[in-house]
Amino acid sequence: FMLTPPSYYPTPILVSIFSILPQKEILREQIDFLRESEIIETTEIWIGKSDYLLSQITSVQDRKAVGYVEFGFPNVEIPEGARFTTTVIYKFSDFKEPVEIETPTDVKP
Image (cartoon, rainbow, N blue to C red; front, side):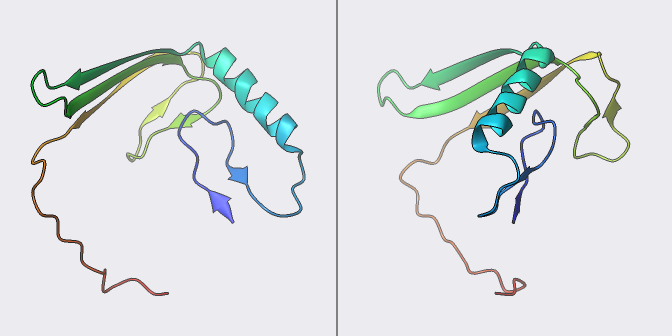
């Protein structure tokens, strides 16, 4: 089966019992790719002073495009060598509130 990798992997990772490339080579390829990308990442974590609950995580990543970079939006491409920044903010709230999880009806086994 194929795993969908995060955007910073150069190629999809194929997982099988009979892997073509040893894990060491795959890891080396990913490390080289990350070095070429010149990633600078800053993560900020907010924790409540009185309740010590995690309330927010902000992650900012500045990097150089290595190879073809496409985001999950139509027609958004970043030329090789261009620097770009992505920001992700996770906010957490409604602690101790009940959560309902329903089985999807449109999914086939």
